[in-house]
Length: 156
Figure (spheres, rainbow, N blue to C red):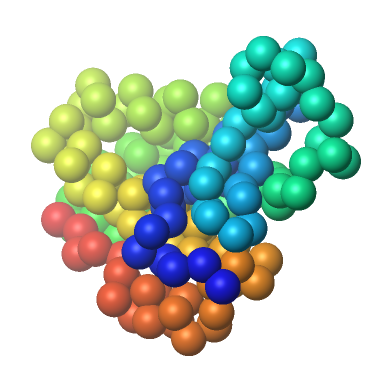
């Protein structure tokens, strides 16, 4: 088992969120916890292509976008400013929800940016730990302790 305090949870969270393309994959070394990026043309060192099957690494596939969408919906629902919550909830309806949510926050509610970033970051770290537990890289007890110590932050 890997030691949670030595892992790059932010890197794992980034990998879980990365929806960009299929010409690269995020991987983690199961013994060291090192997170690396593999590309079809540059392998993991950026210079030498290598087949994924030849690597003794665990792939970190992206979570579906609806998982990350739910963070925006939960944030909009939980903030105390009802008008802002309604506008943010409307912004995430339909195609382009992520961009509209971001624009609405930056343009109309910049005072909520710090709260959104803290909320999103805690959720992302929790997902990274859940992924580590699900892939038997961190034990259940460590994962449960992390979850208990990192609840969703209070929102304004």
